[in-house]
Length: 452
Image (cartoon, rainbow, N blue to C red):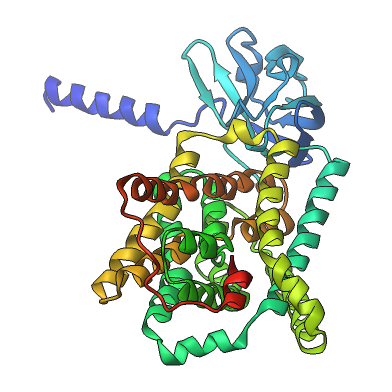
């Protein structure tokens, strides 16, 4: 073997030794107790950290090595400065162990992971525990402290939702459903766009706009699977849509929601829950969906047994529905002012894109299927306007903290952005003189009073 070849072999041996020779720092371990921590905003909490199996080669160089605790999201939670670094000379040289309290500070809603790194100051490198276990990192959840006003808020939502569905049951006109037989095409288009198109659109937008935020994907998805909102009838009347078709689609959408919402949550929604590392709250969702049937049945019973009370409830349906939406949005903002800190361009874009694309896609679909302008406009309005109150209701009552708070900002954004395209259409028609009279058949005075 010549000198050149021998030199090549020595280089190969040296490279193998560098790559495969075990590091003197590789066998240390870290353990948090407990491994999961819940801390309130602007508060601190304590856990116990244990470090063991620290190699003698590390202990002999306290100026070179140190342990450092790092948070994956410093803006949400971090380790107190006095605990952020653990000097090597604190570790027992005989056992290679150290144990002590660590204080974690919570800043804002969300989750963060705290890990321990062995830092080599000479090589400017860091190393995680090689033999990692389930407790080698600390999962931190930052939540808001429980307040009386929060319980009042949730209780008020439940009460108002019950009243709305009692009124809805009392106002439910079975005769309107005959429109499915006499003119089935337009209601069928609207139904498919509402219960199939909007959930798929909300899922796709969530993945596109919030690729790294599954909690926000969940908030947008819950909004997309909600039935059409009561404001759709009013906007159909204002913009010259088909009021008969609007009432029919709203009725079908809200009745079908008892089945379609759980169906979407337990199928496509499960993928979002998995990405978020959350468990699907099957029992809670099923319970709250079923619980909304009870006030609906009460309303139907009132309609059958007390026509006088029914007429009163029918007159109150629109004001109560409008009050519900306004109450939830305003109360959510006032009691949870932190929502404004969560507002970003992504939140605003999602809030505007969901209803706007819903309007556009539904209108184009209706026109391609030869629907007249009035029906196409009505289908678009019914598709794009979601009942954000129901979305907030399910998010706040079925999810744990902090996800329940974090996801609420999305339907609030949708509720704020939904009227903007319709308002733009109204103002354009108003000032250009293009506001047309409703092409639909005229309503009776009683029916017009019931709707408007």
